[in-house]
Amino acid sequence: MPAAVQYRRPRNNRLVRALAAVGTGAAVLALPLIGATTASAADTTTTAATTPAGYPNNLDGWIRESLAIMAEKKIPGTYNGIYRNIIRESSGNPMAINLWDSNAAKGIPSKGLLQVIDPTFNAYHVAGTSFNIYDPVANITAACNYAAARYGSIDNVFGAY
Image (cartoon, rainbow, N blue to C red; front, side):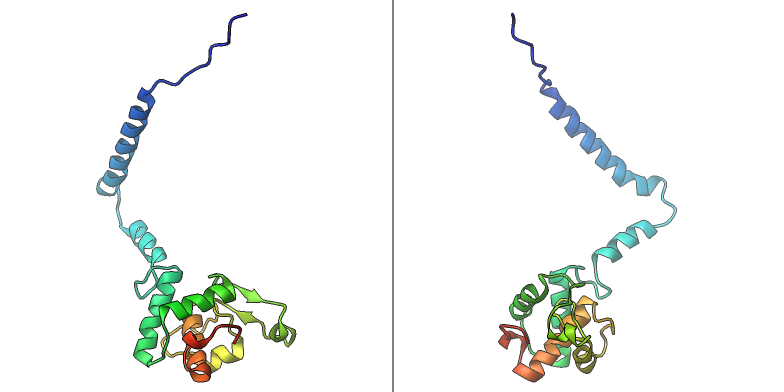
């Protein structure tokens, strides 16, 4: 019995796919010029990717924005010290909440990137940042303000604080 013939795609498919990708890219670039009546869609994309201050809307951007505010307010701390503590406390999740430790047992769970409790956040809140404890920049900046008052700097914190 002869072996079954196996279908092989012709090699020119790569060329066809590449040309289709280039054509699609050109169409995407041309669309705003042809049919767009406003630029609101482009503005939304830009806004979503950055913070109101223009930093990237990600962990790196939040830390850099916090450091800029901290520099203005003379709050000590470095990128590495902040990053190290964020990774230990929340793994970079700005919505993290600890529902099992002693603070949580008292009804005041630790929240946000640097796991701050509400009373500490309120006491060390930095003017010009959000009053939302889950706001990444506000959380980092308040936590660093607290760490500066208690330990001299967030850089001196190597465990739960």
